[in-house]
Image (cartoon, rainbow, N blue to C red):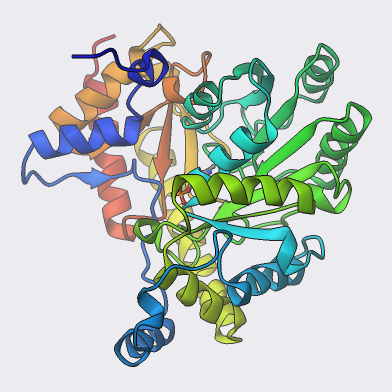
Amino acid sequence: MPRVNELWHRLPESPTRALDRLLEALGRRDIVNLAAGRPGLRPPDWVLEWLADRLASGGLEPFGYTPSGGLMEAREAVAEDIWETGGPRVSWEEVILTAGGQSSVAAALHALGRAGGRVLLVEPTWFSYEPLIRSAGMEPVFVTAEPPDYRLPEEAVKEAVESGVSMILLADPDNPTGRLLTEGEARLLAELAVDHDIWLIVDEPYRTLVYEGSKVYPARYAPDHVVGVGAFSKDPGIPGWRLGYAYGPPEAIKAMERFVEYTVYCPPRPAQELVAMYLRDPRKREFRRMFQLEYRKRRDTLLKALAELAPEAGYSKPPAGMFVYADVSRYTGRGRGVTVRFAEHALRSAGVAVIPGEFFGPRQAGRLRLTFTYEPGERLVEGVRRLATALNSFKI
Ligand SMILES: Cc1ncc(COP(=O)(O)O)c(C=O)c1O
């Protein structure tokens, strides 16, 4: 057999895929899923009915290719939605659609990065960033945010930028911590990008999943240095339909469009049509209010159950996103790999799936990411009950 590309060969499997394999091996067992970063609600019926009709009566058109960067109507709808939710005013040409949020991050890293460049990540951070950075021929540099609320470590960020990085990449709202950047933090990041003439990539797939406070868009403060990326996987909830987006200065967007063109040619058309219709319909606001209320209720249910059933766990209330990031080190310790072992123990012995902290950065042993959006309320309580059983029976 000829040799395979070492870089790709060595990239680790993502924890969510590893978990899928484990779940498959466990067969039909009843598992409470606190691991998946998935929505627990379907997109609204009115948009699904519209799309069904469109597919049935639209002739060949809805099955065809679209321009590489997506349909103009869909790009316009995204631009309007970003403006309407407090973001910068961008034109449709400053927006592209991609085949999923992960693909938007990949497009930004490949089209805007330079081989050998260093990319600043704020740990804990989403587990796909490091493999995506490495696959684009760059290196991650970590600074650490501290519990309980994981505020941006401003001094460490400044020092790292001054020591020479070519990009800053972070999620806002954050995965796994649910942190929402304050206006001061967003301004600081934007200023650093301008002062050092580097890219700030802000990953915003959770931008409408906000329960307290509000999302601040750093692109408003540095439109020539910030690229926003995101996805429709969480709102309106079509993760398997693969649709993401990016907005930013036209030259950056043009280069990213080329990446889309030569990797997937164009993003999936039915998803683009659905999103264009969803974003322009005023009923979108009511749907968003509904899921925000429901997810906030689920978050509070999970937190209450944690307080009662796992009182030694540490966490803060996430104002946004899909996750509670809990410190369980009083039960597990913080030894290397300990929460990876714990997650497997919890799955096999108690039937609850969680993501171990080790996947979110080099200093994250002893922590767990718990999803509150996917399972309904009573299953969340059952999940925490199982988690507590596993914590109390875990041998370090
Ligand atoms: C921070 C972050 N960025 C990007 C994505 C990717 O979204 P998608 O599923 O559309 O690829 C996710 C999904 O979990 C995420 O948490």
